[in-house]
Length: 260
Image (cartoon, rainbow, N blue to C red; front, top):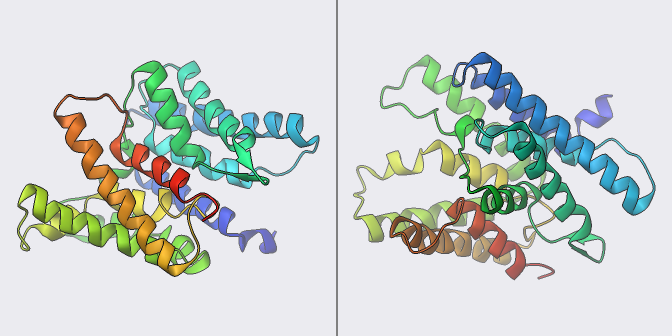
């Protein structure tokens, strides 16, 4: 048991569970429990069934639990249960079948959210990772931010993707200044956006779909930030429909950097 607790996947799951628990009260109680049960159960069951079909072997789906918790925190909680289950199934199907040399290409959670969003015409809600910011810092606000930052231990220290995270945040900040005219005084508010924090420390550095080499990490993070601003500007202008610019940018970068 203690040995499994040292696994990065297990530690990331625990951090995501902590974020979920900290989000209590952000949804009606029945909806809060509903989105967890449907997302987590659908993801883990789908992974077990699909993996068994593919390799004829059962295992503890630690990675699927991480994906399930990400979906719990990001999926639109007002969706019908079968739509959330379908998003979870798509995520696991992409993970298991869109592979080269026994390695999946795309971030599973991002894949499910993007494709499911396009099918059902829904957006990524980020409900569990968008409420932490407050202009008034107090003990409660600080505690919420500490919990939100807990996955950083895994993504930066355990799997050493800190250069990707740093590159994304720096590029995002520069583009925010150039594109939106944000001043240096208000820049911290932009960078403290809980959605950006969650994306950069949980979604961006997924170990099997992001580069491990330092130089490639720098380029990877910068490309995701640049693509996000391009897609976001087109979404705002009404030129395209994409469930979420950050998610789509990540998947595009996954493809660009696959096997690089």
